[in-house]
Length: 128
Length: 128
DNA sequence: CAAAAAATTGACTTATACGTAAAAGTCAAT
DNA sequence: ATTGACTTTTACGTATAAGTCAATTTTTTG
Image 1 (spheres, helix red, strand yellow):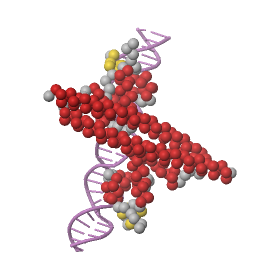
Image 2: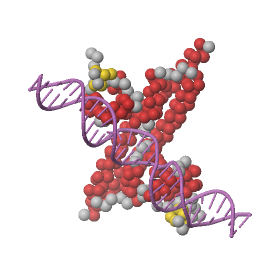
Image 3: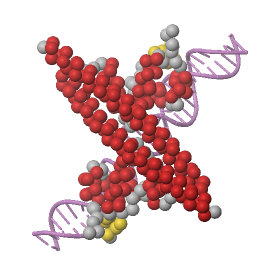
Image 4: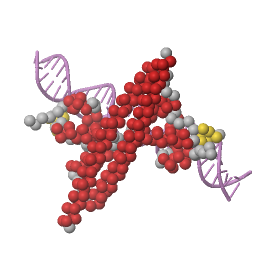
């Protein structure tokens, strides 16, 4: 085994550019190995990229994504740091719940838009 | 009645700056009345702002928000336009559903982070 | 009605998250 | 040894969505 991915394999899989993945490396989110100067992405890197993109889709900034990743690799040792982190987590959770509500409401609204379109289409159809 | 709001009332209510609301006007999202040069926001404007901010929270661009708003004011009259719009609506709906899944997963992940923090705190507490 | 407070405009600046171009380097296959 | 596909670095560019600042009105209040 010891499977690895090239950068373009991953860009194709995830629909992002090479620039994006290199940018994530510059930002310290991923640390692919090197063979010479070429990046080798391991499955672990791949999973990390999935997480990063998920965070991106819901609107987290790079800094926020970095924070979340850091917790997994290296959970803080100081009580103060831990408490700070937990406060941040609570805050993020509230934010996400708000976002979920926003999405529910907007989905309903999209249903209305669609219905309005259908009604309009029917009107036009009848008129001709 | 005929209630209206000043710009600062609304900035306070929604936690945005006056510049932001003026920016939304420049972008054609809202059209508050004027008394002289001063903007008068009607309840309808207020509701519109709520919608705009909701769209913003879930990551819609100004252009997308403008599109959605336009549908309500002035639903397209041509069949082609209507079909295009419905395609867009479907696309947005899929996007929002993906986002909702992302949020669910991230909420679960935040639970894990929190638990890890509590475990770590307990360890530290026991050790001292 | 004068002073203070609030609102307006325009120009400029900022942060985020990449895009793009240039100029080489890498590597497998022919 | 060359081709072609891919990858690298560096550096500057760009779009979005406002924020900041300064100079003026405008409105409100004592």
